[in-house]
Image (cartoon, rainbow, N blue to C red; front, side):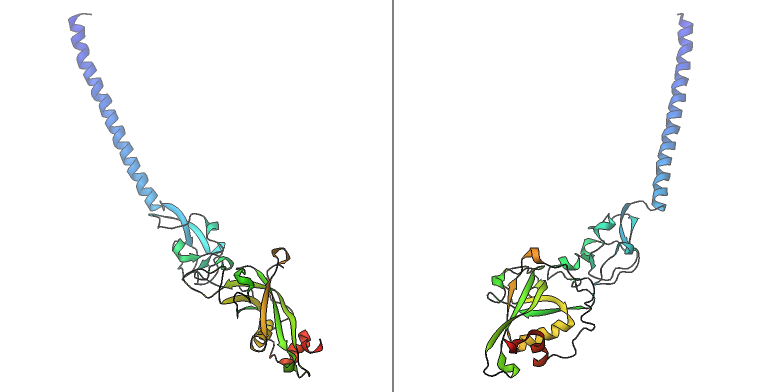
Length: 264
C-alpha cells in the first residue's frame, strides 16, 4: 500500500467512528426516553403491587365475603397487606373498612369459630340461637379438659320437693346433650382454650336457655365430655322446635313435664 492511500484511509475511518458514535448516542437517548415514558405510563395506569382492597364499605364485626373484595395496584404496598382475596374472605372485620382501602392483617380477625377470647370480631352464633354462659370448675367441668369446639352433656340434680313430691328425694336427670362449647373462660388478653377456668359459653336455642337458667337457679349442674366421634354437625339454621328466642316462661311445671323429675 502506498503512503498516499494510507493517509487517505485514516480520515475515512475517523468519520466512520464519529458516525457510529453518533448513532449509539441517539440509541442511548431513545432508550432512556422510552424507559422514562414507560415509567410514567405505568404510574398513570396503576403501577405497583396488586393487593386486596375493600370493594365496598365493610362494617365492623361482620364476616368479610369474597364479593366485598378486589385486587388493585397500590404503590407502595402497605405493610401486612394481602395479595390473595381467598386469604381474607371468611375473616371478620375488627373495624369499619371504607371502600378502596387496602385490607391489612391488623384490620381483620380470624373466622368467628376460630377466634380466641381476646380476638373477637363476632361469636359464631347461627340465626335462631343464643350464647349462654354457665359456671364451671375442676369437678363440674371434667377437670379442665373441656376446650373450644367440644360438646358436653349436662346433668341436673334436683330435690323433688320443689315439685311438691312427698317424701322428697334428690333425683339426677340428663337435661341437655351435645351442647357446643364456643368459648372457655372470660374474655381477656390471654386466650383461654383449655385448663382450669370459671365459665363455659355454650350455643343453644333461646327456649333451652330459659330452661337452663331455671336449672342454674334451682338445681346442681355437672357436665360430661362427649367423644369427638359422637359430635353432631354444628347448627347452621334456626331450630324448628323453637320458633322464638324464648320459651315464654319456664317454671317447675314445665321442667317436670320435660324431664319427669317427680316420677322416678
